[in-house]
Each structure stands twice: as structure tokens, then as C-alpha cells.
Image: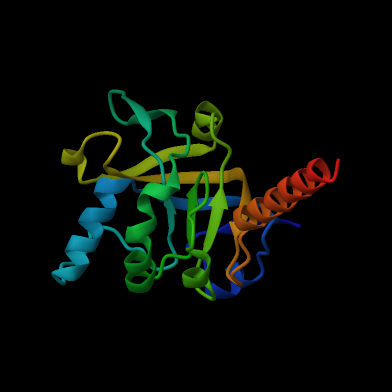
Length: 197
């Protein structure tokens, strides 16, 4: 199925998404890579208020490239980065912030049970950084700019951003694990056929 949702996302909205569905997003998306995750979790652990709200938010594993113009920022490229690096920090992020979606590439091994009833993982095709930038209407804000361009938290306003594939839904179905299972079964079948000759 194809869906079009607007942020902030509700629990009811993400419960309608099933692994394999296509999604287009409109609204706010926050970039967050390794350092941003560490800063968020550090602030939460010390009971400091974040400079941005994450209830119903979408986190994008992305280190964008931007060009500063006279009065604003122009997004040059904004492709996804590998999500696996953030896997260990994601449980605390999901449990303590109320985020409803994570965008990235490559999946996050073992994270599906944590997302149940709370969050979804959305896959954006790697290698399409310029196309992703075209889906960004404007830069609404930048937080923790001292971390550098790639690691800062950029708040992007997006319109029909996608296509995003629901890689892990809020029911614990993980497309990445399914693909690995199918590949393993196919490999076993090949080995068995070879041994029987």
C-alpha cells in the first residue's frame, strides 16, 4: 500500500503501516547521526530540555551537505547514512523521546522487537542524495551547529518526501531479516542440490 502522512506522527498513523508499504512524508524531519544521538541521550540522562521536540517526530540518519546563501541554507545533498551505527543508541532514544519513525539505510539488526507499537523504520534508497535534497522544502532550523555540518541536527521541512519503504513495521516485521532468511534458504537448497550430485 501507499501512504501519505504529515508530521508529527501519531501512534494510530504508524500502526496502519505494514512492512513493504510505501510512504511519502510531509512536515518536519530531524537529521541525527552518531554525535547527535550522543548529545540527545546525554541531555536526557541529565534531565536537560532538548532544543527541539521529538514527540511524534521523524529522525533521519543523514549527514547532509548544505550551501549557505545570504539569508538561508540550500540543501545540496541529503542521502541516508548507514543506520547500523546508531543501533545501540536507538533503544534509549525510542523509549525516552516518543519518536515515531526513523529513516535510514541498511536496517538495524535486532531492533524490531523494540519498535513494536511505538515506531517504524523507513528505508530510503542509498545513492539518491540529490534526489532526497529535492524533497526538502527548506531548512527550518539547525541545532548543535558546533558538531559540524554532518553531525548537527538539521530540522528540514519536507513535502512528499520519499518514496520511503517501511523496512520494519510497528508489529515487529523486519524486511531485512526476511530477505536474509530467504537468502539462507536458497543457499541451503543450492548446497543440498550440489551434494546430491
